Length: 368
Image (cartoon, one colour):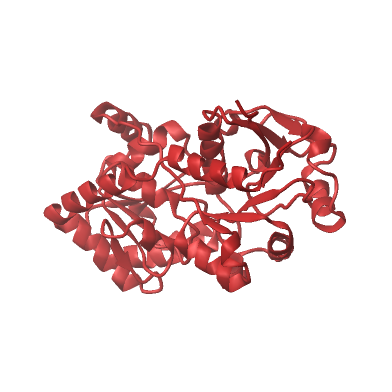
């Protein structure tokens, strides 16, 4: 029997202040990969003085390099050292799970979740843009294969200069948690959600288009609350945008994973009018709970929700309001969207993502 392929996967997102969707996707993929006998997965991260929060603990052992994050990223991106093998020992493949790009001291597989910073740099900090641009340069020069979660991201990579032969489509999966009425009631009671509600989840940042959603909400006359779930990110003053609509808008902040499925399941509608996405995991999570979805056309969320959601122009608050109103008022439409969404979500599995990822590892691995 052949020896398992040894892969070092970067897992630094677990220690970020706002781990976000990329951390969720990376940890779920890592967990699915650990169930493959043909693979030995080793985590690698910067130096840290503490463990990540319990919610973000990796499913594999993590080896640490001797530099703290900022110093490590600078050293990787400009000095091209240290190698991940300094922490992990010999490996057959390095998997950079985001745009911090370690030196190519073994064949390099890299995940590009999105290239949103190219579409609208104003949605990011100046330092963030500089960091992402350098990561993209290194990805173009050093990555043997690039994994993309959607065809939208693949097309963006082609426009950025990647050779199509280096790109592989590896859609994310979703964990379909079975939720009962008691689970929904528990979360409703915990957060005093006494009315029907329209839900949004994500990190509060400019490309998520929360101002557009709130302008749409102001146009909609409905005996319903708008519930916003997720941590504060950057460059967005949520309180300012909510303004006088505060009596119809609830902000819950970050919620633990165990509460997300029930809050999706309890929503009358899930609305996610983001300007640009590389995949759109919240849309898939809502569909997994049979919740009708309103989301953006012209980005990857349209690809994920194809035929199972109402698609709107994210730049048109009136269109967003009209679609939410349709889903709230038309019970037959809402039920149909819920059924179609659940069926579509069942096709996206982390085991499927792991199989495609393992195939990419085997394609490039250095074998003895």
